[in-house]
Image (cartoon, rainbow, N blue to C red; front, side):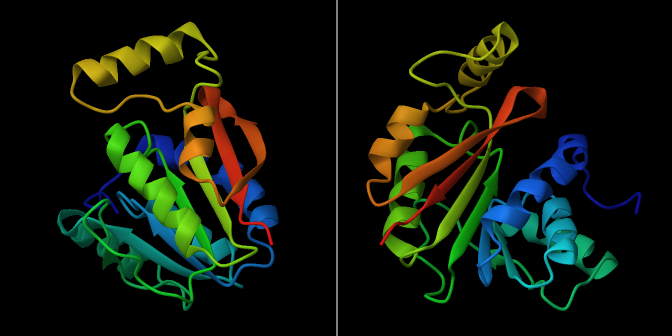
Length: 196
């Protein structure tokens, strides 16, 4: 396992996220994971959410690492990663009824997050669920000084920085924010659902 790509944050938060996904995705069947990164989340969630078909996705340069994790810990409901990158990629499959993404919105540029929210909002079927994990602001307010400092360090390094719950709601007009779960390390898990 030592030669597999590894993210300590993914290891730290996976069990907390899983508890929320068990509820949010209880009636879902096929999940698209946007930005699978190392692949650690994909193998863990697929193993523990056996009723779901889990479809990892990321830019092509990350596929080798994701596939290595899948080869190390395969699950029958876990697919090989597909190429998906906002805003270049189109929606991959009409059978997707849920989406998960972790620690992407503050790395992506603002316009990329805007497109992602619109794409998920438009593409999920009625009743579809979208779970979005990471740090966010609420009405322009940071939850802690450390979050504020991290946001500005991200912006200085060329990343998009924290997105606000209000702007995310504006960008996903077809989705309702069901719950903003408070998570460890000053993060949130946003549970969106498409009503109907």
